[in-house]
Amino acid sequence: MPNMSPSRTTVAAATAVLLASALAACGDNDTKSGKDADLTAQELSWEDCPAPSAAEGGGGAPSPLPGGAEWQCATMKAPLDWSKPKGDTIDIALIKAAASGDKEDRIGSLIFNFGGPGGSGITTLPAFGDDYAKLRTRYDLVSFDPRGVGRSAGVECEDDEQLDTYFQQDSTPDDDAEKKKLVENVKAFNGACEKNSGKTLPHVRTTDAARDMDLMRQVLGDDKLHYFGISYGTELGGVYAHLFPKKVGRAVFDAVVDPTQTAEEGSLGQAKGFQLALDNFAKDCTSKVEECPVGDTEQDVKDRIAKLLEDLDAKPITGLPPRQLTQTAATNGIAQSLYSQDFWPYLTQGLEEAYEGDGKILMLLSDSMNGRGENGEYSNMQAANISINCADDKARYTTDHVEKKLPAFREASPLFGDYLAWGMVGCTDWAVEGQADHPDVAAAGAPPIVVIGNTGDPATPYEGARKMAQALGKGVGVELTYKGQGHGAYDSKNRCVRENVDDYLLKGTVPKAGTVCG
Image (cartoon, rainbow, N blue to C red; front, side, top):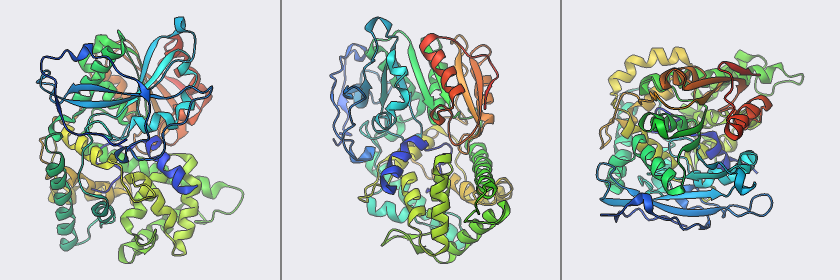
């Protein structure tokens, strides 16, 4: 289902790699026998990294780090089915930048997950590695493609031509015919996933990825897992802490998923979050000294956007030929621009041009959300996103259920409500049963985990940080608030956030619970 996410988010860091380029070694999915092998004793063979595969988003090999250090890549074997640890194995792709400081000061590996689910850590960590230069003084920076993603047994669904059509479809049906077409399209997409990746789909749950991370910890030679999770990565980190509380080292959760919510509650929360971000964009634009080019007042900005989307529903405009900008693509592009305040100028320019009949910029924004490169090839980001969400989430929503919930979604967001409500049907015909209503992250016995909430976060609303801190348990979750805009806090470069996180990860100094950074 074309969406911001069925129940979680595609992290802005991953999609920004595609966006920046647009606006300015292939993997093996076959499983292998690991019978009688002690996978914890495997030795990784680190080599210079190849260019990212098409499934990871393509592009060139990662550039050297400051000082000339090279990124290194390796492959770790993990059980396909963790209930059969000596059965068939899959390859998990890893990337590493060795610690830059003195060997005696090295703490260990710091493992990153940038979210999605579906984001490639192989692509994302090098793209934003400079942001973590201080952390690299004492840690090897490590990330990976989680199972189902990129080169790690990446899920395959529809081909590029089919995806162009799928992501253009009318995802907010107005009548029975449009509703029927939407359901047929979703069923066809889900069927393609089963046909092309049926052996993998039952084994891409977050609990499986968490077990992979504990194997990774052991293979990397660490007694404890030091971890930095962003967006969905906070859910993965919470599940890890629940399964292995005594193995948690220093851990930071940023842009925090609310672990207490069902898929429906998560989608409704996102409707509120994206509406808040849109309100903040409109306020920012109209409060500037110069005239706001997309509306005279805050309400005028939102009314004009709503009118644009209504017009596109009836008649798309030129996008990136031969594709046109549809209502769905425009909504997706607007949502993408709200992930970061740095993207707001793109939204302003995109709206200006769309009002004049040119939908190129909004389509570029939409493409970045969907993982489409300039060459027309898609990463498997959205296929993995849907596969992991549907394997995790037990709920299977019908069209009748969605229609009953539309009033609540529209109240939460006049602009995004319908879009996110109809996104709930994405798992209805999925081949694999969902695991639970929501993840269990209770982690009694784990050390303090720093949990950062951003008051202006559209994709993982601020309230989720407190819910995560409470769910982790007394003495485990330590909440820190950032009063800002966009998805996440550390990469906003706010000095207060940076200092608190750096002091914790590098020195072990836990921030005072309730710390607020402006």
